[in-house]
Length: 281
Length: 298
Figure 1: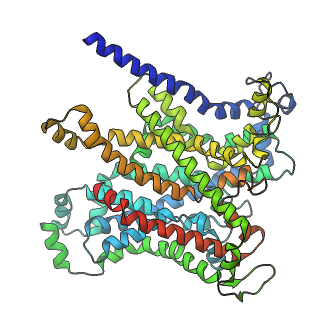
Figure 2: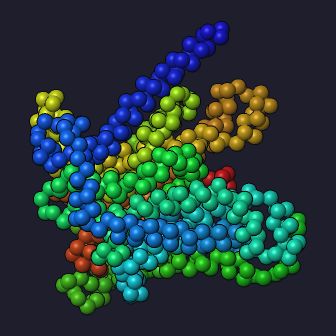
Figure 3: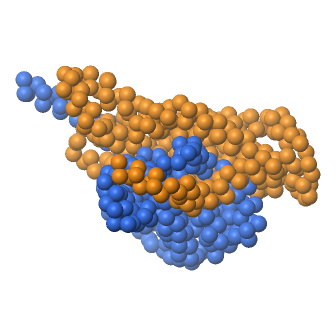
């Protein structure tokens, strides 16, 4: 009997490997191609005989990419933008989530749905009117312009509201007994207890905005505000003919490296956060 | 009990709105105001032909509805979203069930399937542009090795859109796998316990507890992601610019072209209005049906 069960179990696991192995390899091919191309010389690449491992491994593509475009500047811009967005978001979503989770007022459910509308209409769809708004505010081509449309996050509000609702009333009451108001409760009870949700939101927000492309592309047109992804696209579109692939792939690695490295190191945390997060945003 | 006492005794009707104000302020300016502004501008001719806005009534709408390219773009957009999300979610569920079996190398599988989520769409587009590159690219190299002619699939009007779909699936599938893993692992123990006490067997538990809980959640995610995917633009910008012969043009790219390439703000706003109104209808539909259920369940 026991033998039979373990035999069945093995069969099931065997099936899992048969599905997962080839699929994982297919998924990894683009990454391997990216690395292989970035380490090749252009003459070797143009050789029709394709090979995965370069005959001669070179690193000059990276230095060349760094000299062709100001990636250092793009890095600084991107870091400023994502941190600015996250810090403002934490304030706006904590306050709003507290109101939705704990306060009773007329029209609360309707207002909550009006908040969630933002999940469905992200900035890239209303880029034309938003471009005009930022233009009349004289904010075009600034880092603020990239961030400001994300300062309120429906997704973050939703996530924090769920977390706040799960916190027992008694904990909040104890703060109020001591004469503290809502703000004190948020700072000392809600945010510390909702830390897992907050971290999940922070990781999702940071990676989403690090990777964001279209909106920064529309509102920036010089290096002063451009982020990494926009800089990368500009680099490849500078040449009219087909891109110099060795250079392009090296630049791509420069852009994706930090987040990918962080992901590999903090794999568990990242995956947990995305698991926790439900909807993207 | 105590909480109620305090909120009543404070009696401050405006207090909740003070908490909501910062978020509501940005929502109003960058989500709601733009919709009304788009509606307003859509009533004008405003382009390089009309450097000063000229009132046009609903003319822009009549023009766009008579434009065959518009309908082609609409069709492309739905084809793209539905196929991308359907395939990535089905594959994601299949993979999640396998990974959830607690096999060896589970960590490796999770990382190798999920890492594309961590890569910008723009970078993913570039990598796949190189894969699809005519004759030198990986795909044409592969075709040559198995004795097939060079295809240049991305340059072919019949296949270009599907090339982008494949890229999008590669980008999304790991994300859905993780979502489903969460769904499989997050079913409240209490519900399973109740079913056990009631004497339900394993299959019965799956059918009556696990599956209904996952499926309403799944359907909710499915709809929201289709709606989000209708607004994809990064891959198109990087990989095809809507070419060849508009075969891979999607709605947001079309809006971008009208507004920022041809500087036809009237038409750009008309398309924006139509998209926004369509999305709002989706919101109303979702929250009046399945969303309400999920909202109270979660």
